[in-house]
Length: 208
Picture 1 (tube, rainbow, N blue to C red):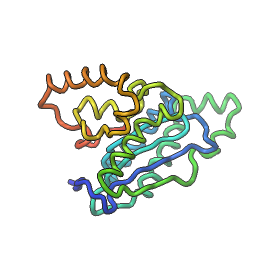
Picture 2: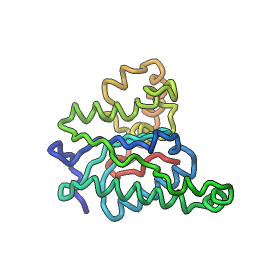
Picture 3: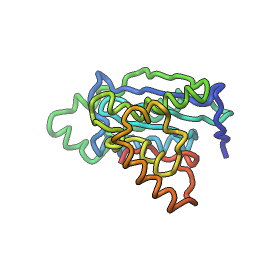
Picture 4: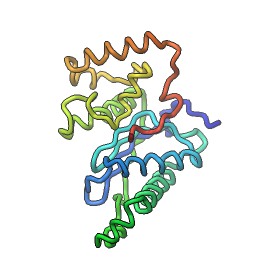
């Protein structure tokens, strides 16, 4: 089994991955299903743990922990992009798209060829980037509150009592809105104290 001990010397990374021409194509149900399937397939072959995740219409952010013996995140993202593209273009709507005269789009790129990678240096850097991931939908004006964006690991973090992963920046961002939400989640945590950490188990990204 891979060793996922958090290591700030090179195994924990923050990523930004963007669609080609910033097309808003990632949140429809078929795209989310294709992305989830691509990530599951990649993790079976090249394991990694997802510490934070958010999916937006034209890009995504993630914090990953890689096994100590394998830091090749480029290979993983290349596979995820390729499998996503294949799944999306081979889906049930592919034939309809061709009949409608959209064959040209089937050959157009879906992703930007490059992506941003930042090595997490320490606990403060980790907290900052997890906050950044979860606040991003608010930053882009998609929702008013972090809790209202469905395709985010924020919900997994709170449901599974990962309180240290909610950093100071997020707590300061919307204290009034989060008070009731915190109380609700803490009540669920108290009622199910035996629950294990979804982050420790490397959950799939929230794409459903």
